[in-house]
Image 1: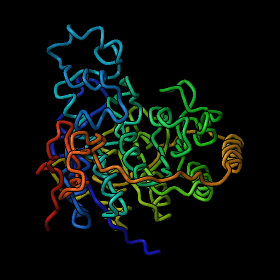
Image 2 (image 1 turned 30 degrees about the horizontal axis):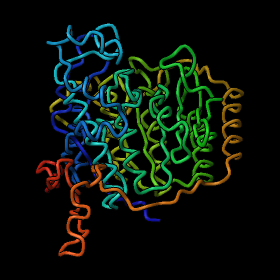
Image 3 (image 1 turned 180 degrees about the vertical axis):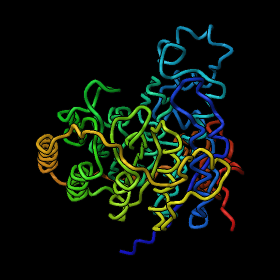
Length: 431
């Protein structure tokens, strides 16, 4: 199979302008740094670049509860008092890790819309790889904010992919366990989740190796609990054999890869010791299977390194070599003092022993060996993208007449009007 793949890149221009607040480790500004590296390295010329649509509340409620989405759409720093009860219920606000900041809901709309648009482009076979570095917020629950995440764009993108694909594989290389995504699909075999993460006295506290799924999903949650100091070599020793077995047994129609950069060396919150090349090796290996893939961002709290990582992984997805010297750009001073792309791992102990890694690898391979081959699903007519509303008014009104049983490509709004494509939904890149 040719390694040259069609790559689409989604970037909402305003997504880097939001601010969680002073001393909060999550900095959306990192997305601007990453985007400017993609530009200054000239990588944008090799991709179809799009400005995604902002996700609507209706799209968000494909997974999230109505009252939670409604709360997020109304809350702002000026009306906190009148929502104090709901803030506690939904785990948002001053005494949580999910603050209410100016433009919060718009921020969620931007990163979520980009992930949904990427999934739709894969579904239509208009791309082999879709990239949204602003997405990957894997901790958000159905009715609760968690771990800096408010809307779970990953779950919504997977639901979009499931309209076309019988099976979707989710891979999470963030240092934190992808608990929100695992929980959403814990009882189904149509989504397999594979997470490598720090486990033990570490947020969110989930992701034990024995957490393998429930009901129809038993065996389809794959957790690799690790401890501090993971190096490139030891990470690869777990990732590649388990990933190869997953692809052999599960045979997914699409992959969603969350590339949280907090597993890199020197992260403000993370405790792994990966270089850019070690982190990107997981991306390269996943790409080698030739399956349609949605590539997302995630955690990452030393923002200059997050930008380095995602720019480099963009180059890996494009099969383009880029220089180690960072080209001049609007944020060049962030990369002082060396102005180099690649990171040198710290001199620190890897607390993962050969015996502990061998135990994890063996148990996961045994779990996968026990699965009864790839589950199948009886596929029905594919629901139209974005539109889950049933057409109500038209049925039976024109039986046998002209245009009987003809619907528009995009369906109708719930009020019966024609659904229009927003003019900002996609912008083709021009060279």
